[in-house]
Amino acid sequence: GQQLNQSPQSMFIQEGEDVSMNCTSSSIFNTWLWYKQDPGEGPVLLIALYKAGELTSNGRLTAQFGITRKDSFLNISASIPSDVGIYFCAGPVNVFGPGTRLSVLP
Amino acid sequence: DAGVIQSPRHEVTEMGQEVTLRCKPISGHDYLFWYRQTMMRGLELLIYFNNNVPIDDSGMPEDRFSAKMPNASFSTLKIQPSEPRDSAVYFCASSSTGPATEAFFGQGTRLTVV
Image: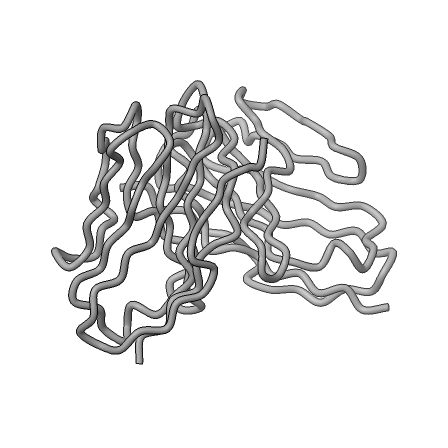
């Protein structure tokens, strides 16, 4: 089956810093989805990518579909306290990666 | 729309008891997913349905777990008998147009088996 890896597993950053995280897969994907999970809630979609090389932004978030179709990247610019949470990548059939836990220090 | 609705929100049960988790997907969505989330194993896809038919149940951990979708507006995940290692948060999600499109999640059921 699909195997997804995310890095880093966790990160602590200062408010205002930019954040980068990535996701790799053991197989080629036609879809990459990035979700965020707040404590006590279910994941919520941030960005969806459907084409290799695609670069998509949603406010301070930017995600890219890697040209190898085996990876994707998520960047958050000028982090704020409400960015705290777990960020998941997901591939086809909404199989999720292990997540990157983000903490933002004031 | 009220979103995906799960019940109960919390469940505490004794080992060996049967547990039934319930989910009402968003109206019009034809895909329904069940996930289990733990610190150790992350967010695992257990099973998903398309038009009420189970498509892939390869994530179901063992025969103690079963899922049904008798109609487009209701699904259950049953564990019988329950064990302490089943303690987790169970999420239901639904999507429209395909399994690779945005999934909308419920708030989850936190199951504790003592």
